[in-house]
Amino acid sequence: MLPVVVIAGRPNVGKSTLFNCLTRSRDALVANEPGVTRDRLFGFVTIDQHTCLLVDTGGLGAKTDDVARLVSAQAERAVEEADLVLFVVDARDGLTPDDEVVAHWLRRSSRDVILVANKVDGQDPDVAQSEFHALGFDESIAVSAAHRRGLHTLVDTIGERLPAAPAAAPAPAPGNVRVCILGRPNVGKSTLINRTIGEERVVAHDAPGTTRDSIEVPFERDGRGYTLIDTAGIRRRSRVSVALEKFSVLKSLRAVTSCDVAVLMLDASEGTFDQDVHLLNVALEAGRSVVIAVNKWDTLAGEDRRALKEGLGRAFSFARFVPVVYISALRGSGLGRLFAAVDEVWRARRKKLSTPQLTRLLAEATARNPPPLVRGRRIKLRYAHAGGANPPRVVIHGGQADAVPESYRRYIARIFREKLGLLGTPLEFEFRRGTNPYEGRKNPMTPRQRRRRKRIIRHSRK
Image 1 (cartoon, rainbow, N blue to C red):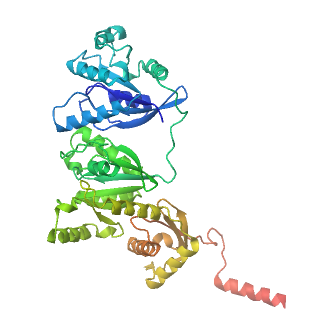
Image 2: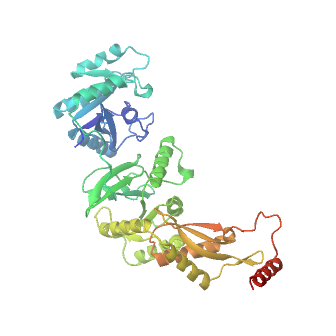
């Protein structure tokens, strides 16, 4: 097991900025307002050729509403699992009553603590951290995470206080499936993750916009490794005006491009929206395999269920190859069917395609519906072969292949997807035009000249 270092403190003291500096990443969302971080965020830090697990947490102590209480509970749980705690305070604000509350709780937790006085820009470090000695911790370090001041001293101190650790971060297990949970705000994405892994790993609340960061949660099910990625809800662009929400949406979209399978969650009690169709298009255009999960299915019955299914068929008529699973994240019903669909589309995504099989399917498709004429000439598609996998890619060669119209390309894609059983997976095509062997010659022979030449050669042999 890797040693665990937890960054803790009251809200808006620079914990996420320090996390990004130590991990040399931009994984944690940073904004100049309190309460930005809500879920635990993990990263790896290498110190003296050894690796430790660094955990960013939300603000401790502030319990003004239900969400704040859940955030504080997440941070307290992280501290309970820590080998070392970096207690971050704000040197500009000085010692506050909230700092004293957090310090009292940390002393009771009996964890090894390093006091980190952040935001010492333009101040004498000794003076900036002097008043924090009243908190009673043995060691304090003055830093400026935003300007990377004092970080070397902090890293050296962490290395001295940690037990021996492996030399590198553990690599993900082979076959690990990255699953991104995508959807509009308040459709149950965080609830699904908590129900799947059996613990309150991420903050889940009825208020929309609870999740802000993209949180990766690894777990194992039936012998297969998964990494669930919880994302912030994505609203229509016209309704997003706050800068913090814009950054959350960007991180959600980046999570889509880094996953294998995107689970698009819908709220059965609300039906389908144009935004749901847009998000499905985003995932497919990014080359991700997709499963549609209709949440809160247990709230509907009878005619409402039939009406919802008809509405889904109309809204997603362009993507009938995407499987639809009906679940209840709160009760846990349908999760087995959901992960069975995830496994199936993941296998389809990695399926190996042979040249004879693809060429035979191409011949069947063109025989059933021949390509159209282009400038009075028939398009001739001769053979096909695999051009890549994950997602599958097919390269088709032929005369005037680059002039195949979009409607015929969709027809070819539908035939290939049905015959190959590529459920929920986009199929990419590349049409390559055959080269003319006489192109570039100054005086190419006419057909009459070629026939005359053949007769001369035949008579000379006699």
